[in-house]
Length: 357
Length: 76
Image (spheres, chains in turn orange, yellow):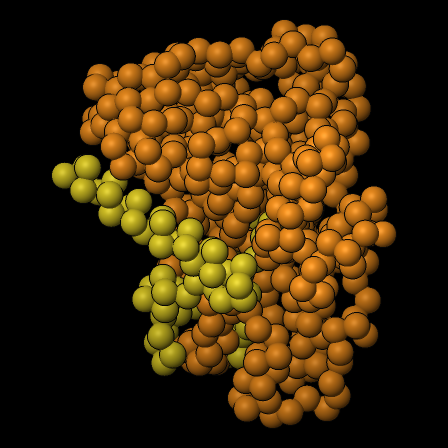
C-alpha cells in the first residue's frame, strides 16, 4: 500500500479539526506478492487487516469491504481510490489513486489549514516484516505462455468448515479466451495467515477435475512433485490444456493435501472442493509472478519483493544482496528498479549462467 | 452470446493490461473509476462494510456529521 506515512501525517494534522480517516481493506491488487493470497471469508479479511496493521504500522483505523467486494465494485475496481465525504454524506473529492499532497490541499480548502504541517518522515510507524520462516524458492513454478486472466472460483465450504489452508487460483490464457483453445493455470497456494507448510514427508498434493459437457481439459488430474527437502512453502502449480467454450456449468475441482502448521502441532489430511467458472474475475487482482514472467523465472521471483505493489522495487524493498549493486542496476537513476531494468539485470545474470535469486 | 462476452471481457482485460503497462511509465488507469465511482456532489452508496472486529456498518452512517477520508488499500 502506497503513501502510508503521508496519510498518517495528514491524520495527525487534521484529526484535531474533526476529520476522520479510514483505510478500507479490499481484495488484493497483486495476489502472491509476499505470498499473500485473496481471502474467502470476512474472518480472513480481518486477519489481513491485522497483518496490515502489524507490517505497515498504521494508526489510521481500518475498515473491511464486505466479502462480495461491493465497495471496490462501486468504485470501478479501483485499487487505491481516495474519497473525501462531507458531513451530509456527499462526495466532495474523489480520485482513483490516493494522492496525499493533493489531499492536504483539499482538506485545507474544506476545513481550513492545519495548525502545523507534519511531514511523512516525522511519523513513526512501527513496521514489521511478514513472517516467512519456511524455505521458498525450492519448487519451480510453471512458465505460462503469456498474460493470464483470473477466473472466478467458488470454494465449496463443507460442514466441518475446514479453513482453506491452501487457496486455489485459476487463470486462463489469451489463446483460450480468444479462440476456445489454450491453457488453464491451476495453482495451489499456502495461505500465510494459517502459518502452514508443505510437509514433504507426507503424500504430495493431488487434484482432479470434472469438466462440464463441451469442455475438454488435459490432464484431468495431477500430483505435485516429490520434493527432497522436508518442508517448503512454494505454490504447487499446473498448466493444463483446455479446449471448448460456452459450457453451461463450471469445472469441478477436488484437491487433497496435508495441512501442517509451522509450530508442528498438527498435520492433517484435507480434501476441499471448488467450482471454477469460465468467466474472468475482474476483482481477483493480477499476480506479478505470471503474465509472461513465470514464477519459476528470475523476474517472477524478483517482483515478489515489490511489497507496495507499485510495479517497481525500491531500495528498501530490494533484498540485501541486491542493495550494493542497486545504483548500477538503476540505470535511469530514479531511485527504483522498474521492469525494464530488472529484465536487463536478469538477462545479464542468465548470460553469465547465474540465474538465481 | 457467451463468445461475445468472452471477447468483450478480453478487450476490457487487455485495456487494463495496457493501462498497467502505462502504469509502469507513471500513468495510472482511471477510466473504470471515473465511470463507476460516485461523482462529486453525489451521495456515497449506502453499502455495508465492517469495522475491525467484523461488526457491520453502513457507509452513510459512518460518514455522517463530519468530513471523512476513505482510502482503499491492501497488503499488496
